[in-house]
Length: 451
Image (cartoon, rainbow, N blue to C red):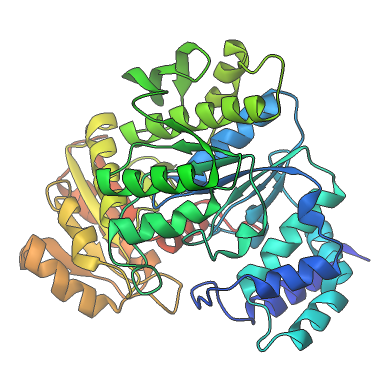
């Protein structure tokens, strides 16, 4: 098959998968995924799993865990969501997204079984369910030693939760996706606790007290061991450094000094501590004779980590940062990280938010940080109309600080102009945020397409 025809086939397959029910169309059940995996011979039983849930920090933590596993010489699979530029980012083997050819081959291999499973159930499999099964099929076929699997939403009924993880990681829990999940921290924690399986090790990031109580109770009920940030592991020290931060971490089996993490913010330091604890727990779960991690390998792994769309500098002169914060807690963490790591004389925001989000909760933390804000829409049909977003922004920022642009590219151009107009030379910046899709669109516009 020629390059052009192969790319056309990939585009065709992607379109077929995307035509299915979107991942935002939640149907809390596991039977469709289980049926398809059963038809395929249960490929998800062929590798060990580190399962990651939480409200914020899941993808960054998963990428760090993946890097730590590879540093130990293990072959890894990684499944995360959503994607920034290409759907292939979701299915990663040994740190690299699957190729277009392998993506198509995997889909073609399982397509007859997808059609069978569609016919067995009362509704066809969704976009996210198909991708989840494809990821598990790729990981089994490779084969990988360990898969780092990020929950799509919630936990108990998420399509990924057909696996039994050796380690269950729960990053900080907050209130989000209340149209699909409970509207209390306790209720959301109950859903996310569903990935904690019997005899596993639960690695818990620092949590609100109410969430921690739920997680600990669920872990006790299933007989899982628990490691808690701030008690069994955590960040002992961190200092801002050029391009990131310098860390000292307390792990489950030892301390790790002089670690450079090329990511910004206290939240990323905590993510690193959680990732190291998860890697240690995984080694212990496998009854590894040497459950500790080599400090040199930890340093090497963390120094090479990136997390696209998470305070990612996508342009300089002026500095343009893309960030995927899409809920109040995530936005507050972003604001704190920007204030700590950058020294802008003038910062203009470009914001596009999904209509089903806590819009004012996302805008509020941004008000002290931004001199002006340009509201717009992203490429998702769920994006809030710019005029509606502007009306909400005016309540928080005041009319003089709010501008409207109908498209993201126009919004970035306008923000760059506003930043440069009054900013000191070299001291102005633009922050593009409000959604993972917004960050992905910005990366696409300023760095080029991903396919």
